[in-house]
Amino acid sequence: MSAKSGENVAMHWFRKGLRLHDNPALLHALSLTKNGGSIFPVYVVDPNSYQLLKCSVNRARFLLECCQDLDESLKRCGSRLYVATGDPVEVLPEMWKKFGVTHMTHESDETGEPYALQRDTAVAAVAKDAGVEVIDFTSETLRPLGNREGGYVANCGGDASSVPATMTSFQKLFSRIDKGNIPEPLDAPKKEDFPISADEYENDYLTLKHPCDIPWPRGQNRSQIGPIWNRADANKVTSHIANGGESYALDRLQKTITARPNWTAQYEKPKTSCTEVSDPSTTVLSPYLSIGCISPRTVWHAIETANKQAKTNRTQPPVSLHGQLLWRDFNNLMAHSANSQHAGSWGQIKNNAFCRDIPWSSDPNMLSSWKEGRTGYPWIDACMAQLRSEGWIHHLGRHAVACFLTRGDLWQSWVEGADHFEAELLDADYALNSFNWMWLSASGFFYQYFRCYSPIQFQKKNDPNGNYIRKWVPELAEMPAKHIYEPWKANVSILKTAGVKLGKTYPRPIVDHAVVSKENMSKMKLAYDLHKKSQGGGKKPASTSGTEPPKKKAKKVKKQTKLK
DNA sequence: CACACGTTGGCTAG
DNA sequence: CTAGCCAACGTGTG
Image 1 (cartoon, rainbow, N blue to C red):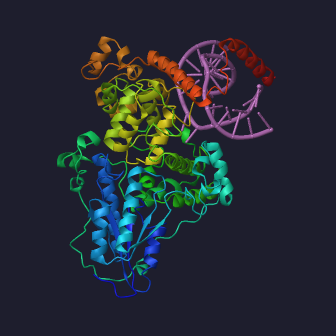
Image 2: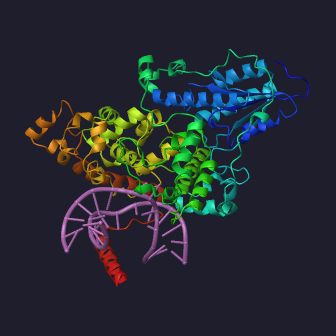
Image 3: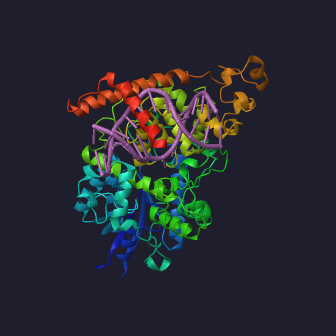
């Protein structure tokens, strides 16, 4: 196809942002074709992308469903999704040439995720050579992260290293910009917004239907990067916590938020339940937000509308539903800031401006026991089983397993845990994943390491009968409630009745939580002291141990006087 | 320098 | 079921 002179041939390149609604880049591409011309909506299945490099078959399945849904929606507009496979730097120029593309739009990736950054830089260079004009738009977060108008960095004097690094101060920044008002989302384009043109490639660039159609990254040993699968594994993926696609995302938004104004207004994240065995207590919009099936601004305004309809008092950030979107922007801003200071530092410990260097051990056996749910702590193993099976765990379950792997029990690096989550979670997100792992391991953003989750007590008080364990660790399904959280404490006859053989049908505990959690707290104390020394450079004299008892006394006295 | 505060801890006494 | 302690983190504010 060649463009008539004066007519634009526009391409919109979907990477994340797999939606038609609130998609400024797509709308711009369409506006270029108002006076004739044509549009090519494109997705490149890129095995090296964050979405596919480390990726379970369940996550791959979700991504393909997103593309299929997008294809169907575009078909209803008289267009379709053109799917290519390979390295965008090679694939896109071929398509530009074939289609006669004059302009390409895409959503910008502002976090500085290393692969996306080098990919977009390389694509911009080849586009320049090919004479294709590339225009990008921010639509991944509530506000732009960087220096664009209305962006967080732009509102902090343009310096990405001086943005707020605590949630409290971030909320202040958020409220200061445009008085905390978030622009209305843009409508999805309608059929009449699309130019009419025949599809000369109707048998080509079709959407992939099966995870096995996705090629492995070339020249790499896939088994060392992430999960591998075959057709039989792929066909077995049946437990769907979420079907991929914008249609499903908007449907879920309707059912969880729009239809439940009182529930929405009273939402308190820490109080949501992590004991449900089939019906999650949260919205499960995260898989859709991470791949961009739904716009954060669309979710924001749906919450706003529901809040106004509610007949109850409404909760406030950070625990409210709006608060959850603020956390998301905050996490993205932190990734942007870290990578602006040291490229690629966000996902690692080294050079990461927000991460303390804690001397984690590296024990392959500990790590694999955790990944495979063989720690001998039923609540931890149940969570890991749900992760493997559904690609999702409740937020508090994630806390428990993350604390357990790192500062709580196994003393393994948070980066290992983050890699596993990235492979398995349907809502794997570059910014949020590392942020939460730093938080839970007390490497950054959260420092009260003496607050430690118990792999037993925390869930025992929520789910005394252990229903969640019974579902995800069926080996323990017959254990009496009294011993289901600590099967090693049950006597021989109880175990026998329940059909459990410790060390055979279910493992003995890999560590003694009561012992190692105390040891680990002292290790944290040492690591923090070392950090203080390296930071202060002798600036601040270390307090002597002799001052401790009087300090305690003084505080106690003050507390007492305060109470009176 | 002191103090309040931080989205979601555990334990025990009353 | 709740309050207070455990042993004590960093950040932001005044």
